[in-house]
Image 1 (cartoon, chains in turn yellow, purple):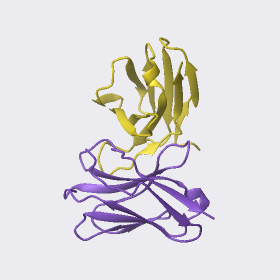
Image 2: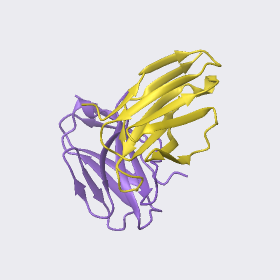
Image 3: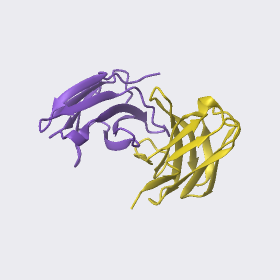
Length: 114
Length: 110
């Protein structure tokens, strides 16, 4: 039973295209996140959602639009893809946004923009 | 805005204990110490966290010094599958995010 799952695992696309990455968690958590890991391997928070509501947008370009249809899902849509968007994107979830709650991560989606 | 300092890399022998140090000299009273690891091509994996007291779970032990300015993650019997990047993260109770640094690349050798 995968706790946090993402699809697709790999995504290769051309500059200028629009693409989506899907995330689902079956842990019953209220909070979900998107993180980006760039080529230098640094992991950075992008968004945080709590009960389907956006609570934090970490100065991410508005080409990135997260959507949460329900508490178990947080999808990431990216418009007008750029070369610099190439990275691994990780979805995560936690019980709540509190700092004493651990976050559980998905396996990642490797996005390559050509 | 790194709050933690970790060695860049370390090696350890299979079957031996691996002791991973972390300095967090500016830690505040309401900040937790978290450890995550990332095995190659996988998502980060939660290991353990603590506030003041030492903690132990099925994966590891976390030893926090009395002044809370440093901690050590102990993997009691390292295996080859423990080869990964280990991240020490300081996180306040109100902090929704995990702020990852460069971590320590741990290589377990047979």
